[in-house]
Image (cartoon, rainbow over all chains, first blue to last red; front, side):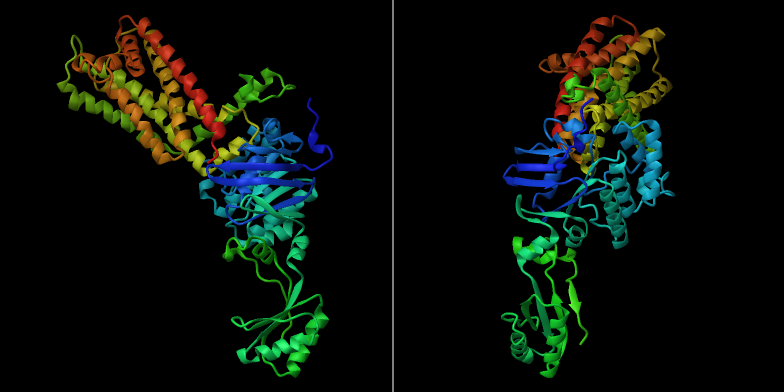
Length: 335
Length: 270
């Protein structure tokens, strides 16, 4: 029997200098990444940055032009068939069969993972129950909603309980509640020891789930680290005040300068004065008091921490899809 | 062969790998058979096409075509049997292109299943559907005046030749589906070889009515050989010479297109 190299020490997912070209497009231009056992690696990037191509290399769907990658100890090219027994993949599109029932879909995928008949039956039932599909299990998938299909798809990728799970934009198009359920489930899997590679355009998702984040742009890694590391790269927090009248902008800037935390920046379009700061609530209260003493009417006052959107904007010059931006984090003081 | 089934797995015996591969294939066939059963409309329409051909040639065009020393209905109906199975196998290309588009092929390729299982399971399921439509065509053929003039074993051999030839062609259609990656294109592209083979052949009209330059091709192309074999087996007369050629063609077509389709499947990364 071959040794189960998934249990060996070292990263469960590792890639070195992976490149892939499609015609004129350099989809991956030398990507390195690693994920330790029982962690979530978030692959973040705008559309066309190479996230899905990287997942396809790691799941043996395409071979890299150059570089090496190993998953669960197996080489993605030379040991592809043994590697496949160790992974689950849920792609961007729910890859389930519409004309089969949920249960049939799950049991067939179990068959292709070479589970015994009994395992297939029991685990299919487990997954249906776990993903809220108990009642729908014997209905054809074409009667399912989008969220149900996605849950079934992810369930199918889990039927063999693979030690490594690849989720390519798993929550795109899901409603907030289903998304939350899914996040919770991924967290449970990871606690139980599964290693997850997740691609996403949702900053919120990467922040919530990923222990380490790799930011891709045009096939290159442009940043890596934890969410906090990445935020530090763009700088600290800012104190922001939005005045009610444009006339007050310069007076407000003077008050903010008096707080002695750096040079205020004035944004005339948004009636915003901002100043970099390390301070917390005390500073916010002080600023509020002084602005009140100066009798400047305000619309908003708060400390703004950089979001991953800012990281993205700073690093790539684009936010991917603006409509998907997470709300700005704020500590707002009512004025 | 085992290299295709399990790349470089030393510890697992080839026998076990083959067993797993057969199980994988049976799983894919089951999936596709369930799909066929749940789309009865497709099954009916798929049978209507060859039925229309049969009625068209029997009652509309048949009167204008003279067969020296025989009846046209017994001439054309065996050819329609062959074509019915070929039309059935055309759905292989459309179905595979659909699976590629829906992303389900990606899932299959990420699973530890044997390489040829997805294609073999589909072509076998489509063969089962073709066999069903063949049964319906036989009933229809008998209803419009076709008669068997040979022993039951010979007739059964004729049916086996039809299914064997059709199965080898389902790999041509698998290749078309994987190469076009789009159901509409696959459908249009699939009709082309069918039309050439059906009309530039002895299936509908005797070769003697064709211009001299066309006759060598029409006489020796695989569909003509298959149709001639089937006619001989259903109607009586020397068959072995034609049957052998049909078997050789079927094996050749199967082998070549099996390898091309497998390669395309391995590389399908649209």
